[in-house]
Image 1 (cartoon, helix red, strand yellow):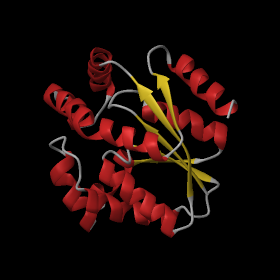
Image 2: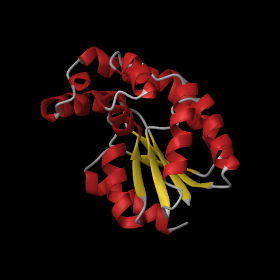
Image 3: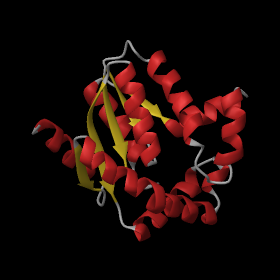
Image 4: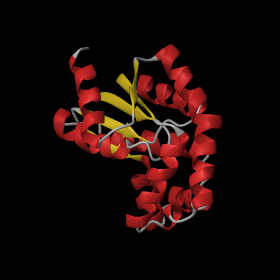
Length: 190
């Protein structure tokens, strides 16, 4: 099984691109947010812990995410490949993921990093709030907090991945189709 990671700031279109890529590559899309919501809905032990953090817009502790991702990797070991959306988000999570992957003799093929300026992210967050039924999408303070957390924690993790993995960076401005074309063209050139 090959692992593809899509990273970038909140509201950069990671989930949208994952859905498109999963069809093109026949990989399974693993959305961290969706999985966390499922764990919460099912009131699992991990879900109960996650709910305390996610509802405030905070990141779930790395140790909990490592446990969850060990489960996810084991559940999907028969897949051709998986696309990780929303994980890893911190340098510690990158290290934890590499440990999990190495222990299972898997590999990370590529990391796709989508870059979008802050003002555009806020416009997209507002637009998503108009159509989303998620209560955490309705609060502008959570939008700002998520972007702040990305700047403080996830950007350094992307830099760490650049020194340890094959990271391709893409301009996330433009239409969904334009961004997809950039990503596919680069994947095809490798």
